[in-house]
Image 1 (tube, rainbow, N blue to C red):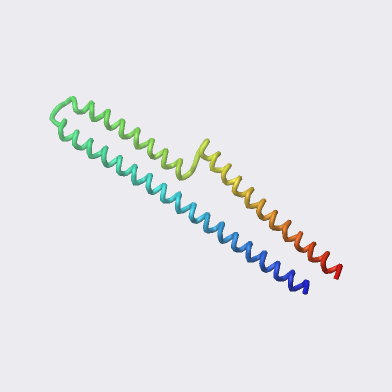
Image 2 (cartoon, rainbow, N blue to C red):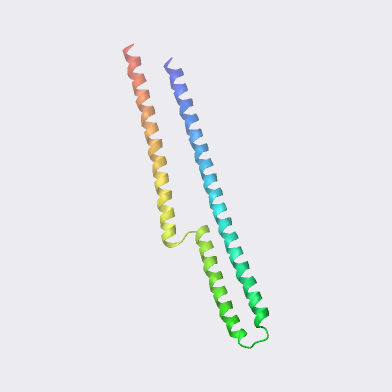
Length: 142
């Protein structure tokens, strides 16, 4: 009878562990999907902003093509666009692969999640050991 109880509790523990792994896997997939969606949204916003700027620049070029002072304005506008483009590329790179303070925050969150998982597993293990000891003490008295 004790063997059956022990086998059942082991099966239940394995089942719960597998469910926990599946839930963690699903959570990771959901997290990856959110990051991908955020990245795609940022890319779309960047694309729209750059297209708008390029369209505005094209309109300015056609208007100022006849004047010689247009070249100076064009150079300034081009420099602004290049700087903005580099800034947006930098932001995109940081969102994909965090650096500096963002990376520290990312790693700290990862550490906290892992600590929580370890604590949960440790608690489950202690509970199972308690149940086993309780089952052994009950069997001795009968």
